[in-house]
Amino acid sequence: MLIDLNADLGEGAGTDAELMPLITSANISCGFHAGNPDTIAAALELAKTHGVAVGAHPGYADREHFGRRELQLDEVQVRAMCLHQYGALRALADDEGVPVGYMKPHGALYNQAMRDADIAGGLLDATVVFPVSLVGLPGSVLERLAKEARRAFIPEGFADRRYRPDGSLVPRTEPDALIHDPKEAVEQVEWLIGQQRVRTICVHGDTPGAVEFVRAVRGFLLDRGHELKAFA
Image 1: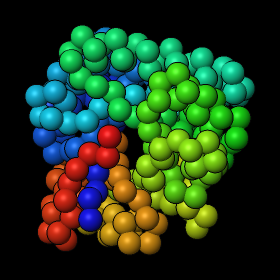
Image 2: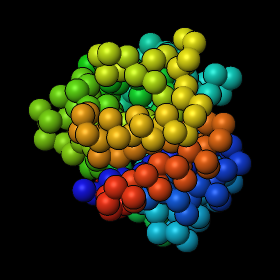
Image 3: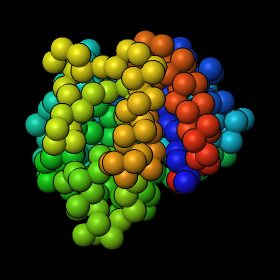
Image 4: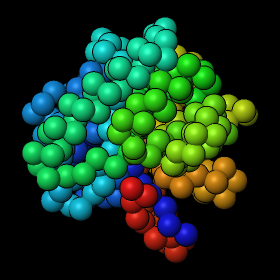
């Protein structure tokens, strides 16, 4: 089975150079929730060097909370925000000669888009202008709307986050929302692929021990006979 391995990069976490050779897709910050033109350009250069696919990773302009605090925007505002951020990343990527093939929202924007039709609709509206794939949780509102609109949707699972019974992520504000043991992360990846039909696995670039996590997940996937390949 073809499986993609992705990470959120360009955010200034300091692990990009170590993570990039290990992954197949890089969700690169657009500069609102974290990062700056220098960290973004450096991540794009690394992606080009290692043949890693690139996607836009737009988030809320809330650096104090790393884009992980929910805001109340309407569909029009979300569309404009995502167009703005994708366009900025696209300009830097064009300069580097790197295509931007998908969009994966960050943090609170991601979580809200999985359950809120207005937020999800704003993301979908942005892909009318930039016709790229969307990444999100299987069984989410975003997936349903994407299928109704005949947009490409890639179901994603997280190696370093815990899940609720309904398939949503345990909020970071709750205890034990993060997985800290690479062995547990690998067990979750097996469940995600086998039971939740995900096709791309994420490890956050700012997770403590992110490099160790990605190495463990990558080794597990290869040992199980999966082919690691970008979806975009």
